[in-house]
Image 1 (cartoon, helix red, strand yellow):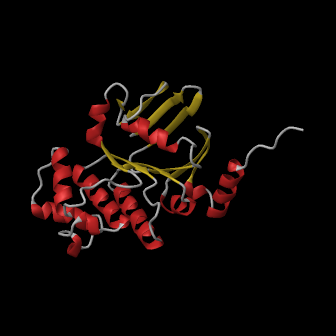
Image 2: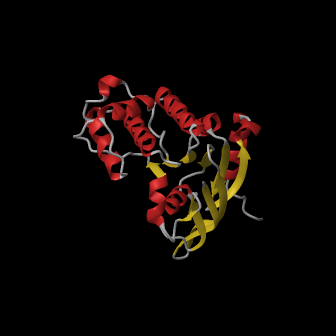
Image 3: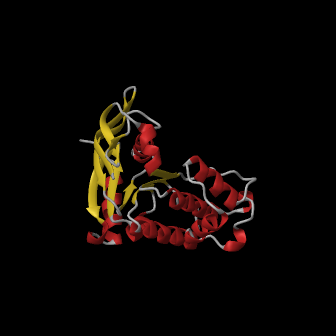
Length: 238
């Protein structure tokens, strides 16, 4: 569902992404780990068509993003670190609006069902988004993905700032989408959450994918040791 082929992005003399090759299959959750500036957000933005690659290719559901970014939009849902919803509208009104943009005309019962599936409490459906916590807003984002029947979910630091309970609940929702066949790529700093929810984990540094492994083949302690080892600066030659 997601493929990058030697995907590269340069800004002048700065190499932000260096020949990235990764695949995320139907139902997989792929977590990209790395420090700020590692290339995680650049990868997400290239897949969204927000940026054009300097070389290489990206594909969403076999559609080349550079050649037809608009066609990929019908397959995609995107949840950034701070999800932009209309604060003066309720959850139901936001879901109705964004579903309409995606060409979905849903009745009130359908809207309520999607919000319930996303884990939002019914008493909050009619409240303005301005009263919501970040975790509640992220649930509306999941409801939008469900209503759109998205095949691919792109996430950029979605659990940043969430308390442990909200972060755990978000992980549960990702696994629910995985069971529906959604391919998820999540950029994150959270090693614990990556180990908990991911099918595959990649570690990036300086625009390069340094390590890649299946999450069930490595312990959290091994993941942390590998990550911290890769993040250490190289010792200067004497």
